[in-house]
Image (cartoon, rainbow, N blue to C red; front, side, top):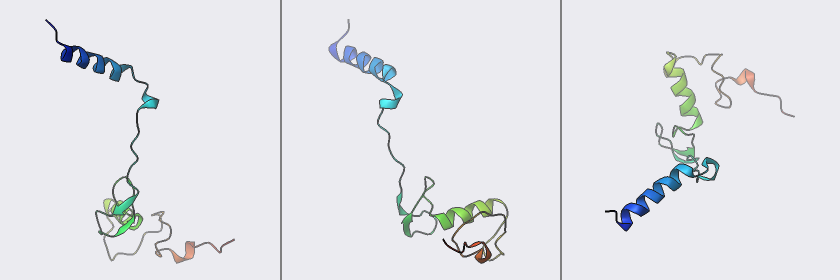
Length: 90
């Protein structure tokens, strides 16, 4: 004996499995908000980190610590750590 609610649930499950993935509503990751490391209201990435904190986190994973000289191979841009890498402009 099936009820109307069971039938509706079965239909919604079938709909979900047959739905086109490109049509499913996509949620955007946050782009503004508080950085979870420094707490400042800056543009953030998917990890909820602002760019300077993200660079520091990546460097710390490789053994760098706050106060140590910035490594040349870090690849960061615009933090003031590599004044010789700044472009001359247009």
